[in-house]
Image (tube, rainbow, N blue to C red; front, side):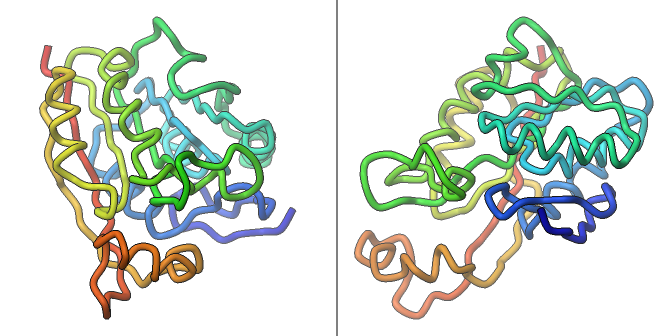
Length: 227
């Protein structure tokens, strides 16, 4: 494992190269979480926790935090980081909301894989499992949009970060169909990282980026369960 510095409020984190560490999307989501009323006793769920950065930031405020990831290496890493930080975080292994079926939370945060990927499906192993999300980047996004309302209490909020490359209107429409009131609250343009740089030609062929485009737009979707 190597040490990564994080600005999420979680302090220094341990992260192996195969686990997604805090990056621009994590920080954008952390800032959005700062605006929510996360206090002692708030029930928070972090879906796709990775290193546990967001889970630890919430736990540091006294929230009752559950974190889920579908890779054992991420679950192990998040548990180690929670122990090193001296913070109580329940870290579960499983697919999206399956490990917490029947439970309800005040706040759900998620930074899922969302990078459009050549081929029909996302990879199921290796480091790329943290970002590859199928040809349209929505392999997990659509599932989260369909199911998140079941994990929210009335008045509960989902904060979701993803790239505009996978389409913002489909996310808003899917959340609205599930009964959530959704809108975009934050936008940030960041330079392409190594993965997108390696896929520029393919992304251009698909019409997802322009000929001279070198930045990716990240968005925060805020969705509230009103009933």
